[in-house]
Image (cartoon, rainbow, N blue to C red; front, side, top):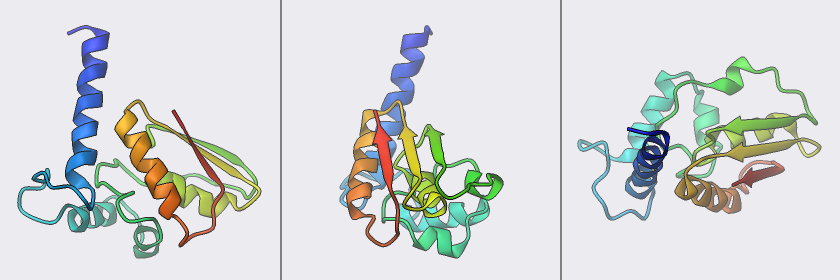
Length: 137
């Protein structure tokens, strides 16, 4: 498999995750046994997110596909610019924006257009927290 085929497979796989795990999806979810949002919350707890963090992001920003809690490891300072590579639907971007405050900036970058689209949708719903975020293509 060449580089382009690998990249296309990754994009297709993550695009499927967005389609299957968002609120309005009619496709069967990847967690065949249960509600994907409930499972995403449980996975979030396992990998170190607090109840507060899991509750204070827009619904469908947490797709349950993260690999850790980078916000817990970072020492984010108000006013900083944060870059999240592989930002997915923006879950960590929303959390980081709470730390950077109104004077900071959070930039999310993802290879999958569907993830960027989902993140932009979540950005519009994000009125439950204070943030100043941009999601880049």
